Amino acid sequence: MIGVGKIPAIFLSRGITRALPGKNNREAIARTRATLEGSWRGLTFTNLVDFDMLYGHRLDVEGYGRALEEVDAAVPALRSALRPRDLLIFTADHGCDPLGPSTDHSREYVPILACGPQVRRGANLGTRATLADIGQTIAENFSRRIPQGTSFLRDIVPGAYDSSE
Image (tube, rainbow, N blue to C red; front, side, top):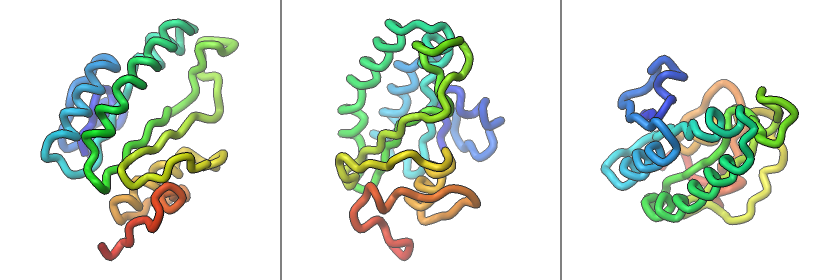
């Protein structure tokens, strides 16, 4: 697994085979795109630190909005770098709402945005029971299982990959 940005530190480098720096959103996205455009086959796990550290905890609504626009502008290039069976998932580990009542984590639920060449547009995943559902979806995408979570791969990829492939 390639860890971009703070990911190696968050997981104490456990399971990380290659660590790439990403001191801010822009650098982390550039490293992720380079990974997608390269020969890497496997999981690339990227942390976009600016949302949390620069804007969410500081209740900086305007900065948060600009960061969203920058990431939004980068999505087409990321999507164009995806291979036919690749899956790109955007989410958060916790909600740090810049409009929140405090500088602490203020949201229980986080968004999930999944895209890729085979991903069905407009799939409503509803409110998931646990963040582990994303992990289980990633595991299933690699024909694996983890102890927790319910995969939503078949909800977003018509005829989702058969584990025998």
